[in-house]
Image (cartoon, rainbow over all chains, first blue to last red; front, top):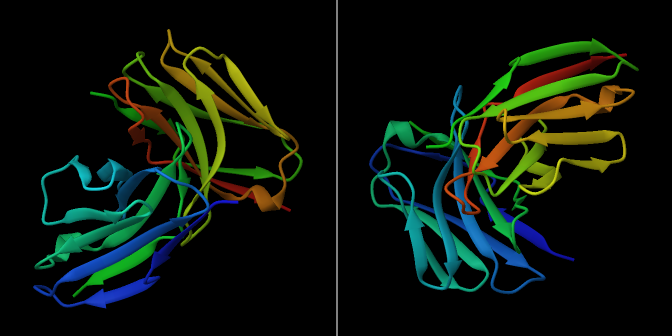
Length: 110
Length: 112
């Protein structure tokens, strides 16, 4: 069966510090991968999606970037965090259309 | 541009009641529509996916319908239980792709 992992589960970072969030999927190959952010009072917002290694599409101009160094690994990064980057970050994978989500990372920027 | 709206934002019902959650979307040229459940502080759990060519999907006590012409989907929950308490999110695909646009959700509370 397929499983999706995210780490860390929670993170508190100061403004201006770098960020690296990791997502890995097990039990499948060549999945579509997605990064979403859920901020307080707002809906779930698609940040990046990837259809293959090294193929990243950005949905919203922002302070973040994404990379896919391996088939089942998706990384969300920032060089300098802003207060507005706080939120709940969710990774998802899709074999075709249905999307399956990871447990999320709660990021607080102080 | 696809926009998804869910009304009401919150709903409280007694245990055993049948209930309907509503979702509306602006672009009828959707690829699919999906319903998810989110428990507090957790990720999303996929409940049902309705393809654009389908009218409804069923899973256990859940039934989701899709009416593209009116831009609406409903999630019907039969014989609600306290364990059904969660936020339910509707998401519609956008621009003929698999990318999803989410509503803000309906927070459901089922009281014992």
